Every structure is written in C-alpha cells, then in structure tokens.
Length: 177
View 1 (cartoon, helix red, strand yellow):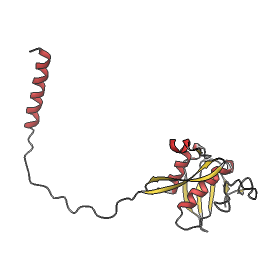
View 2 (view 1 turned 120 degrees about the vertical axis):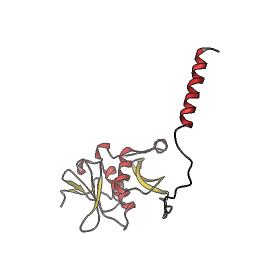
View 3 (view 1 turned 90 degrees about the vertical axis):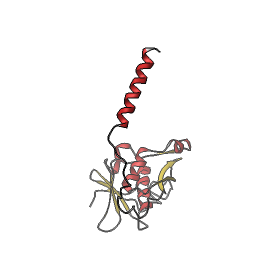
C-alpha cells in the first residue's frame, strides 16, 4: 500500500474517532415554545412605469410589497434583461437615487431625489410620479418631485411625461414651498 492512501485513510479514521468522542449525549426533544403564527408575506406584483417607444408603459414584476422609495430604486436600476429585450428603458439617471417619499401636510406625496428635480427628463418625472401614484393607498394621489431646491408637480400621472400635443413639454417647475 502506498504511503499517500495510507495517510488519507489514517486521517479519515482519526477524524471519525474525534467526532464520535465529542461528548454530545443523546437527549429528549427540547421544547422552545409556541410555533409562530400569523400571515406569511404574500407574493404580489409590483407595477413599475418604464419607457417604451418614447412613452410610459406599465410593467408588472413579481415580488413582495415594496416601499415606494424601493420601487423608485428599481426604476433607476433600469429594466431587467427580459424587459430590455422587449424594448423597455428608463429615463431616470442612476444618480437620482437614493429616494425618499413622504406625505405633505396638504395631502399628496413628495418624492425627494438626489439631483435637481427641474433637470430630470420629462419621462423620468413621469416614471416617478406614475409609479408612486400607483402604489399610493389613496387614489388619485398628487405627487411632487423635489430635488436641490426645485420641485416638479405634474397635474396627474396621465399628463406626466406624456407625449400628447395638449400637454406642455415639461411639467410645471418651481421652488418648493
């Protein structure tokens, strides 16, 4: 018998002896209390607004319920490989993240972005407004995008980022209250 296999056999036997003599003794089952109860996080679909052929389009992704800010991060990351193959893109620059979403005193929602809000492309504002409005508990939700002392407040999701001729090229832009 060659020395290498003999050494391996001896090492394996030593490991087996060490494990067998580790001092763990058999015991009865140990009670740890009542099993957990309640609901399990249900899978749902997330509605995101991406850009396709220069217009906003809804995309449903399977997943768990996300915060509005987390959904906006998905927009900034961009479409999945499958969505890109179907022609979807995003107009939201990655540097617009991180996002925060809060409720304004007069109602409505305020989305804080990390870039000047007035510099965002119209379609990016539309993606943000429509995605947040779709996730709002009360509908219709008025959404204002705020960043670097500027705010952009489209009248509603239907006109945010629209390429219809009756809608101005850029939603109204002003300083925050």
